[in-house]
Length: 553
Image (cartoon, rainbow, N blue to C red; front, side, top):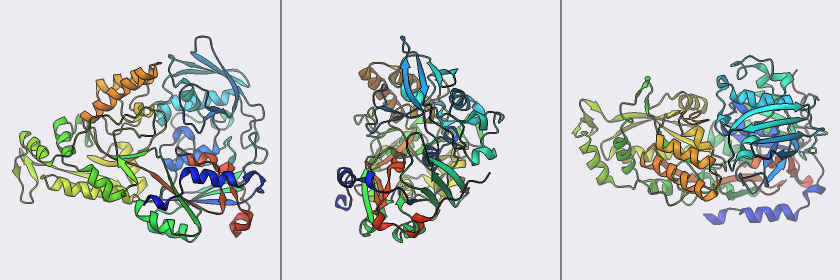
């Protein structure tokens, strides 16, 4: 299967072999997606689709470079901040804003806009997913119109990375909106940004349109338009890509790779991924969240279920060579990942013995185990848009049935699924996440509120004082060796606790129309280079000449 792909090195050579700088501006890229954006303002975004759009609309103070190094500031590239300087104690950074940076309504980007970006994250009513990665930032202050000081609670290797997670927001647009009202405000649905593309329209459930910004301080994008076309049904989305109605599809489902690779107008290639999937157990009763879950509050039961699942067989059956077994709440592309973590093995006999020892010894008529009159049964939702998660869940269902466990699967459209996940309305859930190069995401997704920034996205309510302590120590240790050792302790703890059945870490497979001349592909966020994509003039389509409509007032 590996021969079906254009490797990243070949793709890089294709881009280098064509002088994309000599190509005239113009053209439209249509990106096919199975789900709509959940939000368009950076601090309000939870899903990948929202992140993709918001990253194009809003510039940060600086952007992590292609090395994906999150330690220090050497590999970060200036954006809204033209320069910065550290205090002598390394507990503060003063950013000097670019004097030519403008909001899309023409107003200049000023220091108080940075302050607002921070305030929106810190406002608990906004439930921002960035609370975890920015937890070390204690204050943001405007020194003058183009200078802003950011102060930190302590020194850490990723101080600068934390600073760059704060996206400035135009104070003159969003500053007067009351706490808790931003997410549902009209201004949030028609964002005024600072990026190389500006907002044109959002037709919920159908499409989002962006247009190039003329005179942008970083230079006008080579493309005129970016369209996100939402098609919830996977077969329809793939058919549109094959018919050249869309230009990009990412990620490509494993069962579609061979067919798309045979299409003469498409490049299909793979890259390291930051996506991993898991079956998360809810540690709290969804009907009474103050109480432990009647099943999954018991560590030994979670371990028994994990013992019963043959992850290696599932990964091969669903992905062939396009995925690896997940190691835990991490991906191998992260510098802090540790492949030596001792995993709970597949051992059906041990699973049955442990279930017996826990008292699940009697059987219902259908073979489901029972204890004190309660069936060992639970319901698991999954997004109907993910064929991979559906297939994995079906295989898990069969494997658990063989040891007397009844797992009912509930497909949901993505908005419904996301609501169930974020509200904790599930017993267990087939979840997936696109993490970031930094391990700081552990704070929000798996740590508790006992540490700064903890628990913001911990919808499964996993709690471990050992895990929390190790994560905090790992994220604040200045010595890289010590940091990795602390994080290894955290990873081992959460695996031992069977907080989830860690399923797979995918190799990201993407399809792009060959008419585009591409820069080097970024595995963490390919969309960040869209401003440098160009269209081969000989392969332009009628839609490339269509101008963007003006944004509604």
